[in-house]
Image (cartoon, rainbow, N blue to C red; front, side, top):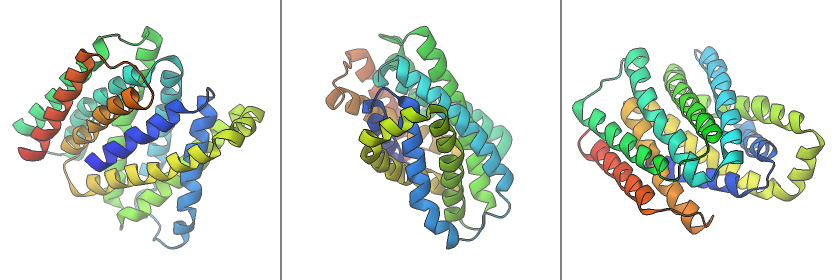
Length: 269
């Protein structure tokens, strides 16, 4: 999950650093992911028992990506990324206990609390504009929704790889295609200069979420969803070093609390 979080932060940094047309950029990332996994659809077994979960995941991802595009268009990555990623594990933890029947131990609750407190610290100082904050919180809620849906779906399939392949095909063809059609000629113009970055980010997306889905099949979703939010720490480092965004002491302290929460989840939970 830590590897998943690190890769996820890299994908979002590539997305944020891309052109101003965020919807076209997201269409290229998700479309590239679908093209990469498409050949495997003829090799892996069909995800019997998970088609409804895949449909629910597609709907949740549509909300997630729509909110993500809006948030990144309105504010710095270092301002909105911690909000969207940090609000998700609390919602996902509650849902995983109620929907999946996962256990909620004291150590898991403590780790999630540290992650959430760190997120608040990162977000409160130089907080994003109110509109961007709203889109970031919407993104976090959608992340929690698709986390629980996909955890249930990947457990229902005969093989995890089946769900991974079809999840990326559904998202890439359905949402990537929808975004591309919405942008029309602007998508073609953006693709001429951004296709390489889109392809790289698309490949990394498969690594990131493929690792996460494999973990959700094997372990406690509340613990793992919070552990994946170590991506916030990597996101802050990338935003400061590569995107040249200002990361003040408060945000750095918040990142430290998130790392502490991750350590609790690894060692004690």
